Image 1 (cartoon, rainbow, N blue to C red):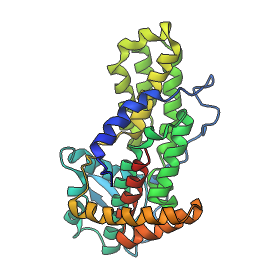
Image 2: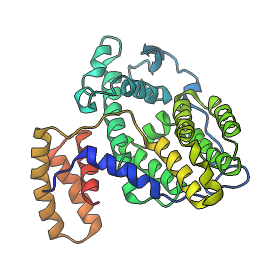
Image 3: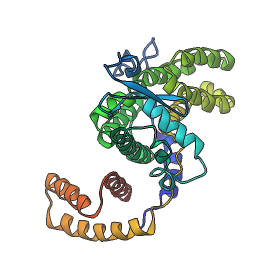
Image 4: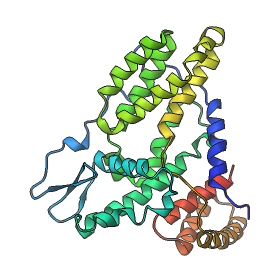
Length: 311
């Protein structure tokens, strides 16, 4: 079986980002198919009776009276903080142990639920790194695919709750493309974008500012805009896309024990696929087969590896 190398795929993905095509924007900086308003952050929801707040790394995490985790955008903010503090260490080396530091602060149900969400957050971010290989046609296509993957890897409820502020970032992305397309003054563009970024919900501010920094690093290529507007639009599209899917998580190759099981799974998978040509039946069988060899979020990792092998 062809062995999957995560780091090589990530490098290839970064190169292919350049070939995404620009999307149209209207006079208000909004793509015609994009959402026009961001939903209120779940952080502002009224606290239920008996609910309490536990602060982890200066981030308030809500727990219900029954000890269950209350899902909101602060959970993703906590996971992003974990990633930022472990940029030199492969995520598979710390994701199962980092929450044990807070075992004496969190009720057992909330701790288990937070661990499950962290595992799924990791797998979602790995899946995003393969997105450029799918050849998403424009920004709307990219955003739609990100939403689809997020709901699949995290589940609909968690996707809607811990990423509730993401629609505000999507709107900012369209504003970014509009401002950079119609305004050729780098200083004025950067100032206008920073003003817009500073009023975004806190959990997505840094990603918006990262989009601006990507642009600032390449300001000199704005001369391309006058010579080749299409290439300029493609460059802007690349910068926006990178900012939306980039992660501070460090991915390494799976463990030898994992790969041994994966090879066994892959051999049986190949036999199953040869037996059946019905795509729906194949997907059902693959789901059962992944559950036979793997459990929990590892099943999502296997699904991502299967997707990678298709390219």
